[in-house]
Amino acid sequence: MKQDNESMLLGIKDVMSIMGCGRDKAYEIMHCGDFPVMKFGRELKVHKGIFHDWLENKRKNSYIYKI
Picture (tube, helix red, strand yellow):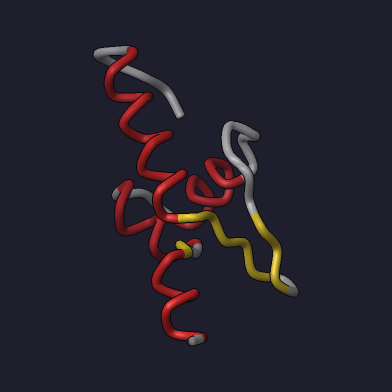
């Protein structure tokens, strides 16, 4: 059951990989307040579907955008 929950959540390294950015920018994205972030101890996690919806919305609303 734990593996199913982990696959639904993205961590900092996942965000770095998806966005093609470094660690500092990934933390900035996770703290932007545009989507809910869960904290497990010192780890930040975001639901995969929510993050991808946020990213798609950013892509649809502007040609060039700053994160």
